Every structure is written in structure tokens, then in C-alpha cells.
Image (cartoon, rainbow, N blue to C red; front, side, top):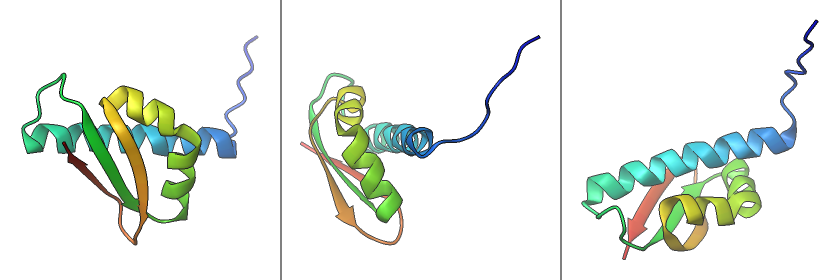
Length: 84
């Protein structure tokens, strides 16, 4: 018998948000025409949940998106911006 605990903990929720942010940053990189190896600075706009995810997973977001800097900007909608 296999038993799975499918409860979503606050930590798992923040990791999921961080992975969604990584996807959004990667999309923004493509739309801006960056090369795969280009280093960028990332500004992520969003509410409290986004701020918490960025704070908890800043290193993961930076590593996955080749960002030298990842910062959160308070806002109502989630927006990922990349720049050199």
C-alpha cells in the first residue's frame, strides 16, 4: 500500500510560486531577445505572496534565470522584468 500526503504546506506553496516566477522570467527573457547565456537583472512585481516567494527562493530564481540580481517591487499584479 502506498500512502501519499498531498497537503500543500506554506513552504511548498512558496516554492510553487517561485517556479511560476522562473517561468515568467524565462518568457520575459525570450521576448526581450536575450541569448541563453546572457546575465540579467530581474525585477519582479507582485503582492505579499510573491514577495515571500522571492525572499525564500531568491537564489533558486537567480540560478535558473542567470540573474545577477533579483529584487521584488510591490504591486498588485505579477510582472517579471529583465534588463542587462
